[in-house]
Image 1 (tube, rainbow, N blue to C red):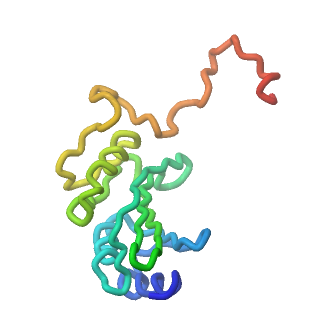
Image 2 (tube, rainbow, N blue to C red; image 1 turned 120 degrees about the vertical axis):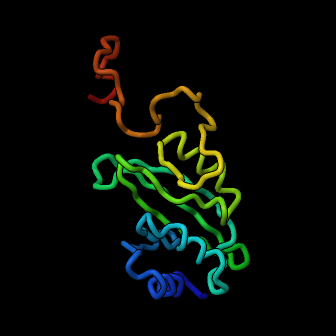
Length: 165
């Protein structure tokens, strides 16, 4: 495959109804897909001889509280032979934040998925050991979600003049 257009065309041929949007930023193709198809799309990107995205660089969570589907998962894949990268994004609802695990495709997904679960509460169905990895086990919230005010509204010792207000 020569460029991002070829990769996107190949993905649209195989998964046309699963692709929600796409864009290219800084020469990296970014594709947003339905969460139910994330496993098959990433498996295809790894195993198809035309794509060969054989390295999972990163998995991370995002939280956009104002979106219809507020929690998201971003996957960065790398084709090491051709030095080509791709970003795959998917979004899940807050009341059922579930997506399939990629541990059977990439063993390195194990700890990345655990970190995403730990900070965002996204459940990776089929994960072999989905427990907190950095926070204490008894923590009853997910610290990277934007569910709390950024500042304490009861604080009286702060002078807003020093903060441009």
